[in-house]
Length: 142
Image (cartoon, rainbow, N blue to C red; front, side, top):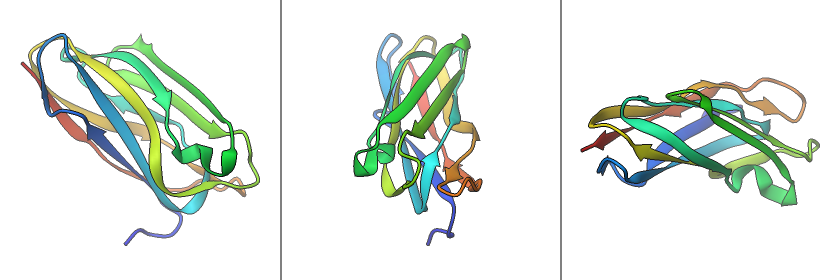
């Protein structure tokens, strides 16, 4: 049971093990019983094991046909992807569950890396800040 007003983020990887040079897809799944209009976050991982390739927005914030402002910076700080995601339509938010964003990472060195949501925020339609809870994943590069 999900507490009212909380945004839950779940990191789902396409493979728990990849070879060096292979790309792993990381889906950040969102779930909330409260309407969400903004959900910026940082995705963190071991920079000696994985590197940022690219990122795209998912369908969670597009509910009701809203456009989404989406920016992902995975180049400024190795091991950290800063993601800005927010709805253009502010009167109604997104609720239920869906894909918040998809990030692709490439294996660059042998080892094990946690892939986790670092700093994350969420706001509702009335401008209230919502608590965020997250569960990460692990990727092994061979």
